[in-house]
Image (spheres, rainbow, N blue to C red):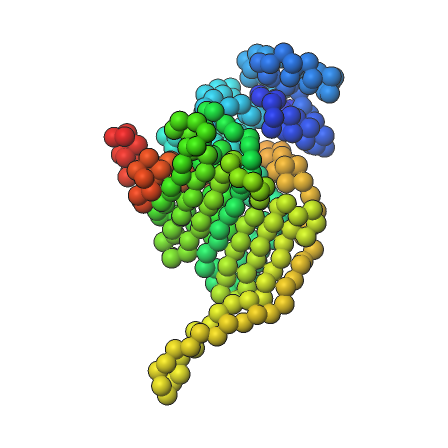
Length: 346
């Protein structure tokens, strides 16, 4: 059994508590939160778990093997670092940290202590995204060309972070996961309509070294609730709609082919409209799959799918996108040196 301590049991932390409390290979030993109301609620839900407002009680307990961090994003680095220094495996909710330097610090510390460091990139564990990844890897849609994301809703409006840092980590992680690569540049534009200097809507374009692109639209000021990913390949196109109850994946046998006449040297574009396939996607709650993966990596001593390096990659894209926002949409190169210099000079 893997002894688990949860630090932060608010909106998302309570979902983590529910899952770790019921995993067969885990024992939720502690729940830590500063709110008396939350502590009272957690104590009623999990009477076998110690509920506290002191995270050091968790870090000093030898029976705690792993710490789950679900506090405010600006506290991720400090709390995760304390847990690693205490010799605990660490799971951190997205984003891993608010700077690439802090993310690198956690990676190096975890490596030095031979501990697991995992970030909660939830959609990398979604069965529908796994289905899309398998199609890409097997060449089932031909060469991948581009993809775009829509993650919009009316609320929840954050006050400590803009919509880019709040919502885009999901889509950035999926783009890098499906393409198996990191973008080389990013341009982002947005506006702050509700609060000064806190963007409510952002449109971002990610460019990859091989010419592929990803477009991300995130907003908490929109009349629709949309959670959709569209992946376009040379032969087929795939749409993942997370708002659908059952039919989450649709595969469109559509495409365009450029043909050149040998005699006339004239190029012609032929469009193809085929069938629409709705495949059966294996069921499963992504968060439970993610939590089980973390515990399984500890038990089996394997590398998490969304490890520290994956977390760092997403943070670097977030930093570059934020810099582009500040520069009015100017493209920002995603080399570590250029982002670091631009951020420090700004």
